[in-house]
Image (cartoon, rainbow, N blue to C red):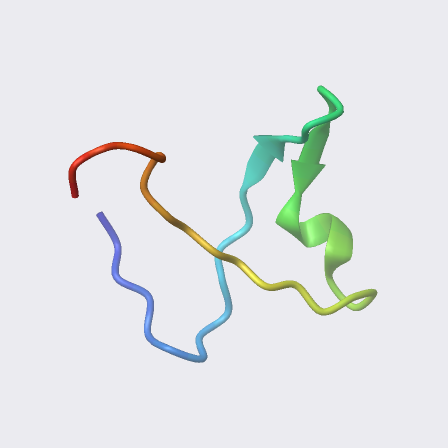
Length: 46
């Protein structure tokens, strides 16, 4: 597990979108602001 400091550039990663297509973080570099939010699954003990 890597720890990323606040304000550091996020590493590139790829996820599936809700439209069943792949989206890479680098697809947005230089085009848009991106906000990354991570949360546990709903209704799970944390």
